[in-house]
Image (cartoon, rainbow, N blue to C red; front, top):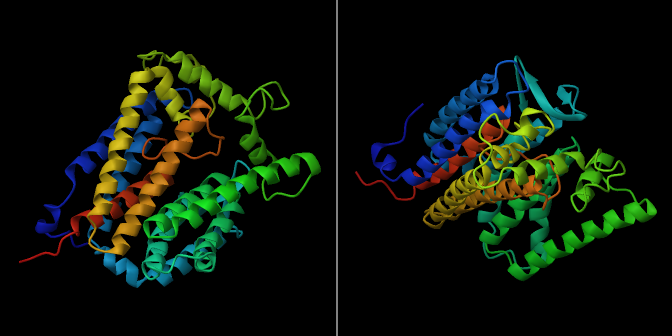
Length: 381
């Protein structure tokens, strides 16, 4: 592995790196409390999270060693590879857990293919859009873009993984907007899509019209409006949301302290080390802790946008736009579902929730941003 030239490393955005390390550090600090009731060793998941961070940082360094322009040359092959991997998930080689077939076993390792599919879509779609600059004005010109992203998205939805399939839509919209797509048409289609989705859900509930969603997925999309109307008085699909709101609301200004949150430590709050880790922050670190986390994410996104603005070519701009769109959507949905303003979709809080595939994929994605960052200027010897 050839490391980047020293002159390139002088270009690196150190504020971006420091913000990333701060988020990862807080994740490790909170994880023992968030996972204390899951195993007898409260540091078990923190140690595993740390190991994945270490692997992810090595992967970032590897990504930095490759000139991102080389990725553009192999874009078509990467797209085909992405489709093959997603098809393998749905084959007998796929691993099923919690009613979903989202993983692939490789020896002792199990990885969630859709996490890496997002990165491959960002890379390949960036090349796809870069070649269509100035040709994104009509619906006919939009259609190939929808098909390009729609194929892997539908394969992910088939697993089923509604949350991640929605991330593909966020990536699509963000990258097309930055690529110069007709904004009126783009956001008109987004508005029409949201309205159609609401209409189809209403039609399904009233007339039984078929939807490509499992019953539990549909219920999650509905109950966030009133979690007590889940058919079980808040003990069914609305239970997670109710407990999350109780946790966040009870934290007050400064929180109850690590290992002191009743909803977390008494296991009232499900999935508190993964999907609902922000609820742990709200209960045990309070409003101040939550604001610090959100401020760090805001600054990371701000630095990402600045890196995007100074990229030397459209391919680099679009890759950073894709990663940024992915992160923003994950953060908004995860925090939103924790406080009850977004449906529960099972999306983790990037760089914070426990999860090997998620952590590794996110660090690789941020490695792409830094790759664009350090190569924003031509090297003069």
